[in-house]
Length: 273
Ligand code: NAD
Image 1 (cartoon, protein in one colour):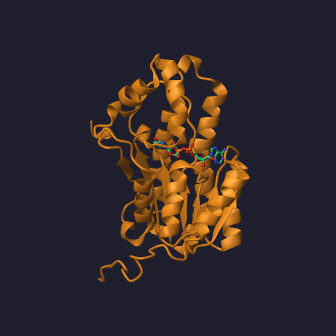
Image 2: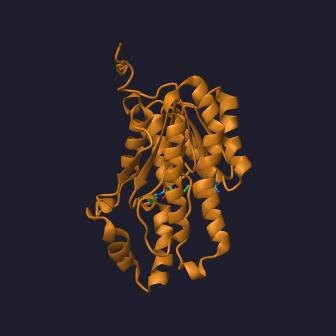
Image 3: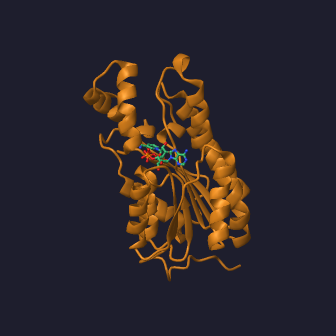
């Protein structure tokens, strides 16, 4: 029997050259950091997310300067059909989808008795439902090509809970269950599906929840940062979007072919406790 060897001929300078990557929620924060890293590694990029048109045009121009093809799709991923269309229209335009990063997400912090029902539903739809719909739309082409890399940006909250985040923790645990299921279903087709589980990363999403957390717990801003956000993170530092981008490049590349169904914690040791 021949044992498979990893082809290392194209893996260093631009390991993802010629691949097509769709990154949800990539106009900001972690998704943008991952899009920048994938573009740097040579992948053509479909950006998605909300934000001012001129800012998005600036991002498209910035990433294009890396010598890759970059487009923007404004799909609102709260809607199942739009999430599926984000993928199918990328396949229509490029004839392929190699890398799918499910990253778009929102947060709301409140005690469960006061948790607004519409916030619960929005968080399930975007943080969990959209990943189901994009994966469902992408898998047939990935399987036909015998190659696919699905990376779900979950959270440390896919592994452990914190109070006042019922909808987010439930959705992120769901994302990890989805990740493992897809990994098993596609394991023989050259497709991997993994979850990145960051602890706290300094992005607009974290900035926005400081006020809510302060209100819910009766604390000031500094107390929220030091005593709540970084309380569980033993290394006492925020992870960076560049660290997550580099991990996504690795997971999308040839050396990660055997990493499948994994939850990769990037949390400074939080979930080791
Ligand atoms: P962010 O707010 O900076 O970015 C969220 C992105 O999602 C933006 O591009 C936004 O436009 C997009 N988005 C929001 N609603 C959308 C919709 N309806 N349709 C399409 N796109 C939409 O947040 P972030 O901190 O970069 O978070 C990105 C992901 O990482 C989320 O899934 C979040 O849960 C996860 N995460 C973040 C942290 C952290 O500390 N920042 C930690 C763990 C996990």
